[in-house]
Image (cartoon, rainbow over all chains, first blue to last red):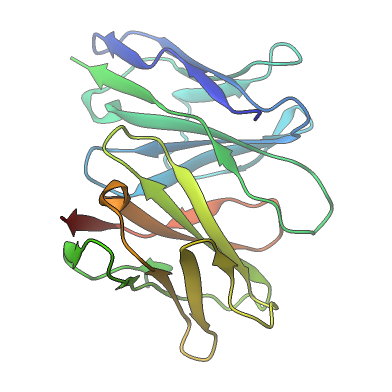
Length: 116
Length: 115
């Protein structure tokens, strides 16, 4: 069964460093999302992406964050200068486009980011 | 106001019994979808079940069913015949304002299944 993959599974970085989290969505999906989950808390939406542009972003997604689909398969989240509070699990999700019929967002296994 | 409210403390259930996990939601959008995800200790998010706001019947998916009470704005998850592997965190989520919009999650409920 096709699945969303994410690399790395765990990233440790120093405060102020740039990190790039990578995701490979399911191949025929057209909508892509990033969410984050601070340890022990709820999952929070960061950004959605469609047709090579951001379609929606949350207040969390400030200028430190950017997303990119550099080729036909990868979807990346970049944090330019990491802060301690960026430590969290980051989930990528993707979804098919079938008009307004229901279809779920498939989540990747997550990347645990630890900022020291 | 919270969009998704999950207020139960940690839940415990005996193996093979049924358990209900509560979720209430708040939206003014007439068209929305409600989801339940399971997050085991390994951390991944596993989709369980979906209910659309216009669906006439409650959703069912194997041992999972959704008790959808639209007027009360509740979408409780019922797990029948609990198994030890059901021990996990369970999140209720809502999608509103269009099929392609984000999911808004509740705080989650921890379920522990006792042998």
